[in-house]
Amino acid sequence: MADIIALLLPFFGLILIGYIAAKWFKQPAEALGWMNIFIIYAALPALFFKLVSRTPVEQLTRIDFILGEIGATYLVFFLLFAIGYFIRRNSFADCTIQSFAGAYGNIGYMGPGLALLAFGEAAAVPVALIVCFENAFHFIMAPTMMALAGGDKRPAGEVAADIAKKVVLHPFIISTALGFAFAAFAVKPPEAFLRLVDYLAQAAAPCALFAMGVTLALRPIKRVPVEIGYISVFKLILLPATTYTVLSIIGNFDPVWVYSAVLLSALPTATNVFVIGQQYGVWQERASASILITTALSVATLPLVLYLIHSGLLPPDLVP
Image (tube, rainbow, N blue to C red; front, side, top):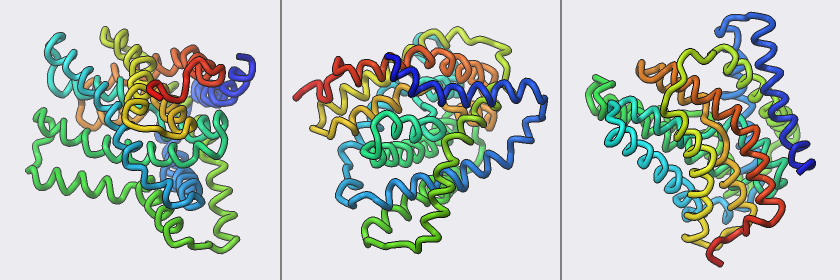
């Protein structure tokens, strides 16, 4: 357990440093803009390109793994939606953001660095696939659900075109696609280019975690939603358990792939959930509270997940 705490300490330490810096220096939220641009458009895309381009192409075509992981995510998503809509009688739009709070983890900012530290380079491919395809699905699902809720008044064709544009042109998708192409055609980039990619990739995790801490500090809890009680359980416990079960049932995957998926599923709510809520003017303060609370709770739950994995208490396949 001491090794696991030592593994997680730098991650939560960087978030804490960002949180304290934001509280101490009192900079406006806009001051974080250029760092977010660097993270989203340079550092993380470089990391995903690096991971994918150096991988044998046959490992990049595990459609069963991708569908299993995304299927588990949306099983939890729609279960949360049903609870909110049919039992709690919340609005369609509120239920959509609540469901993202319980199913959309911080896979971009926290996932790659943590999984690589926990499982080594073998985790590179599953992590890149999860981040790329899960984000693509979220980019599709969020505007689609909000359009169904009536929160988007644009014509259906315009909404569909906007969704396609966001998916195709997102830097994570572009960088991963380029990585696929380089791997498929065995392209060897110039050494100077590889060195630049390495520099950018090394900056991804520290900058992303620091920015996450700043973001949490700049969005203090003003309203704690009643739903956070079960949303936290769904996000931090039920989602990784569902991912583990689904992947065990549908195929025999490399243990590192299964464990990487479980770990990414156990991450706290993504800051993008607040962005989605803000974009449509729905559940904003409560989305912010969900992010902060699940992040705080993950300080306890993530070590438990890693302990179950590294101790052997969680076998790599529930159905051998």
